[in-house]
Image (cartoon, rainbow, N blue to C red; front, side, top):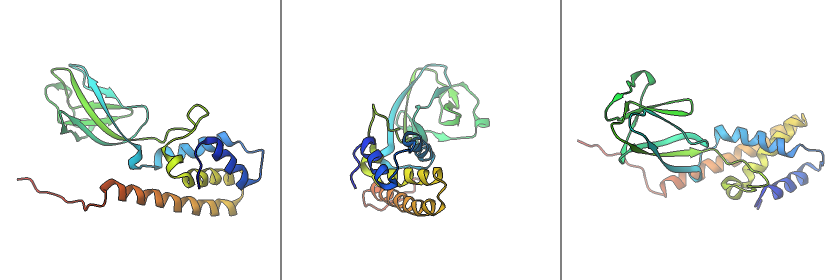
Amino acid sequence: MALANILELKAALADYTTRSDLPLNTLIALTEAKFASTIKHRLAERYTEIPVAKDVASFPLPVDFQEGRSLKLNHRPLTLASIDSLNAEPGDTDRYAIVGNTVRLQSRPAADITVGLTYYARVPALTEAAPTNWLLSTFPDVYLYGVLLEYAIWAQDQDKQAAYGTLLAAALGNLNTDHARGSFSGSTLQTRRFT
């Protein structure tokens, strides 16, 4: 199935539902809201470098941040810690906490620093100005069945809710399998003991 953009997605939805009165933009937005908290895939990973000024112990997360993968300072991983364990005193830092949409460092840096953040980004919303994204182009069935499930909820059709829910679960299963397989490129993950 090839759905290259939002217009092709809307056409496919019209074909599946045989209705012309659907609030398609609302159904797509509701689907994307559910995707925002559930879909994690290697294609959604992003890396950014964030400058942090001297004596500043916090910085905002990117607006599309969903979940962190790695936070590093000078190529050295920082450790996630309890907010109560951070003291915000001057000095080097090796720990951080996430509070809302902000990262709080253990200590205020003695000089300007740059933090490297690798994270899962939310699926970018489809719009007329941005008519495609990685999820629609790579896993169009996830989008299609997700929106069809929202349609069935809107239409109060329990049989279609069950059917589209099953199809969406299978499509998400394929997405998760692809993520697991692609994340390690076929190699076996091994742990090493450092002494």
